[in-house]
Length: 318
Image 1: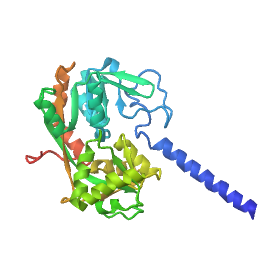
Image 2 (image 1 turned 120 degrees about the vertical axis):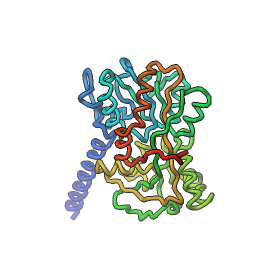
Image 3 (image 1 turned 45 degrees about the vertical axis):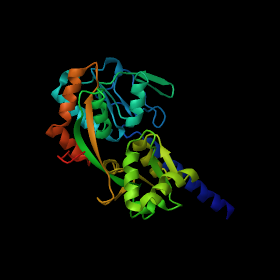
């Protein structure tokens, strides 16, 4: 009997190890751990789940256009860049972009455009900054960008494991004491402001305090640094049960067949983000930067955004 139990345990452990290894290999960073092979240069040395920097793209050393873009758009950029390069072949292979949370990007700009990730220190001057319209509008008023150009909108959704095993029906359920949440850190992730507004619409101050204060204090709410990477990974790895993200992020995870589902948030409880872009003052590649910002509003770029769950800007968007 002991031998039989031991054999069963070994089998379960092996199955779990294979599944965990497959998840670690296949999921982050959803780009294979390296640049697009068509544009990769030099010796390509990816080590899955170890040597990957999923939110830095391209070669800053010979860049002719540098983009700092809010991270929840990371999955749109490959198609968007390809379309732009088709119209501007002189820039092909010479675009460098970062898709970190907007607050992190602003901190990078405020610190001499320098970022340190582990043992890597990178200094690169951006030409374009893209984030929520509220922030880019303020930068335009302060003369930090030439103008604020709106190009897309997005709504919130609740990201859960495939099949919704915790039977989460809406935002009110996120206050459950036993539910483990993965939520953006308000200190640098702008989406936290919209999530806070949605929680208050759904359940008043009590729901907000539960999800973002009490549950943080007792450890059942985990505050992310990079929610567009961490929240889906934590859910897939069984570390979190749910997290509020942009609806486009749920759509992308479903599109690539990760074991992720979404719970819709009614319009009366939801919060809508409006994204804007601005050419930064003294941009090193100002002409290319202006062309990029204009491109974001063109029909071909707008279609790409809609394909991933974003919406076009209407006259009422603020």
